[in-house]
Picture 1 (cartoon, helix red, strand yellow):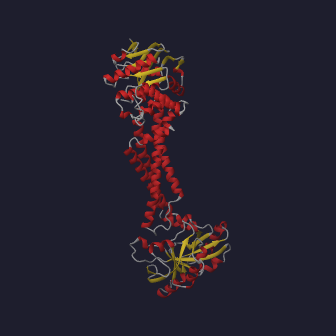
Picture 2 (tube, helix red, strand yellow; picture 1 turned 90 degrees about the vertical axis):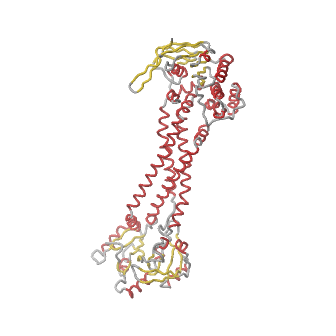
Picture 3 (spheres, one colour; picture 1 turned 180 degrees about the vertical axis):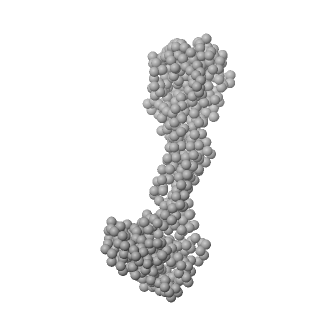
Length: 220
Length: 388
């Protein structure tokens, strides 16, 4: 499903080159729930971004569902992301001027679906995350846990094969974090979504099938 | 459609900031429109000049008179189909400190002047009465309205260039053919002036301020000008003959420093509009860096993001521009009412409206330029890192 082969990544800060990932190779089979753990600055988020196609490796290849995404240009990558990947961020990143319904509808606006079809998809996604009654609420009218569930609905509304989550419980209280992890677990088990999740939270990592540790840009 | 909806919602996100920016732009656009209207009004005489009229004045200065005797010889010059003449009178009407009381008072040849200037329309009966009565005068509709002159009213003028008290009776009110025609003049008989000055200051009679020529073919104007000036080259009063447009332009050029200053200020205002708007758009775009990154992550293109930023900038500039243009009209009208006779013609020109709209649109584009380029260059990873 996801084949990361020998990738390296470094960032330049002024004249300084900072290595972030060194020769990482991982395989994530279809339906896997992988947790990436490690201290801050270990390269977890960078690896997640590379798998999700929102950043490019300096070397190596990343093949997702048979497509080497490292070879795609910006426009192709954007289209690829819209079809294949759902994103869940630590701080939800909902657009504050849009309602829960409108936020979830965002990815569908890039598809050829009719308004009616979009409505059906959005409603089923919001019902799935238990927010069918909050469609017209704005993010500021929701709790942190509810906002994250709207973000999950947005991530799954296009029915992507891969979900990437960057510390999805990092900004939540224990109860809300538990609800979010239960939801991700359900998406993995019931809807067969392949999930790659970065987390610092050992309780969140417990839900994963596999946990990988990164330190100073290397798998340990 | 979605982009438009989001543009609208983003614009209303910080209502106070948006309202203040719109107000700033509208005041700047209004100031721009108002200053352009003043500049246009200043040169209104130039723009409304007739293509077939020429002016003959003293070669040294407009303030020196020309002998009335020149009339016959000038009228015989080939290509000249009609000759009229006029004389600046000056004088003071009521309180000189009140700007409203300032209006041009000109002694004209009653027989030919209105034929020479068909843009001054006057009912035939009023013209006939005017021609018969030496001390009568014709006033423009604008000053008649502003100062309450009616037919039969007496207008007392205290002379300055021509001393003494001068009493005129209004026998006609002329209207301009169109909005660009000066309706602020008071016109009276040159013969009346000539006769009275002969009594009051013997030796000053027999002079006119300038001649107005109508020519058959405007292409012959340079040749006619040369012929007239050559005719009086060695006379006591040499002449300078020019087209009516050049003559009007020479008046405008006396105030060129003021006009230039107004033009410079109007362009500075454009800079202010851009800075006000750019400040708002840069702040808004910076605040939304993460949102743009999220949209890109979802699959929206950089051009969608550019549309969001420039759309917001153009929307604010558009509303501000429209409001500013809307304000320009009452402000210009208020100014025209305050100084009704200062500018004979004070209208917001179509070109001014077009320029003000263009300025607002240009400001909208320029203000969005830097944040748009920044957003286009921003990588998603960098944008997401801006979360803090």
